[in-house]
Length: 201
Image (cartoon, rainbow, N blue to C red; front, top):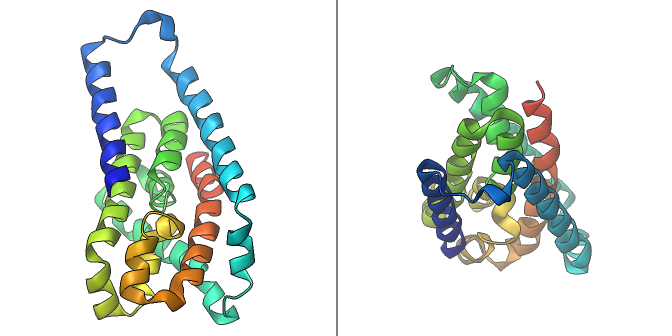
């Protein structure tokens, strides 16, 4: 929750700086900054995944049947976004699918989408994916009660290996920790590929 609020705070400050046109001229082209920030982010994502041997080891203990949960989350999200795209005809199906493919990973997906499709859709992606994380954090007990203990994991998308893991552990049980980490790892891994694919359509 705190991390999401910090990200939103930086977004608001950046918006104000852009509106007030107080960015120093020596900073250069904003698109160049976005590109270098994206490269740095991808490097640190790879570093965190490659440096955490525990994530890869924990995957071996997951039931083969439950390994399908990340795929269900991905296809379920894309199906839901496809239906919702009729409410937002201005962005088109591909744009909406790119936003949905963030799976709650707002920092990476919003930078990608801003780079490929512009700041308007990038802002939509940022807010949509932050909302997904916040809904999971706030509504996990209700999701587990109404739809079962796997529901908070699926709702969390790419965040289930980090920010939403504590609440998932609390409401779904410690026996779902390994599955939650595996789910987050695989969904997280799919984000750059799916977002860039839909942005290129």
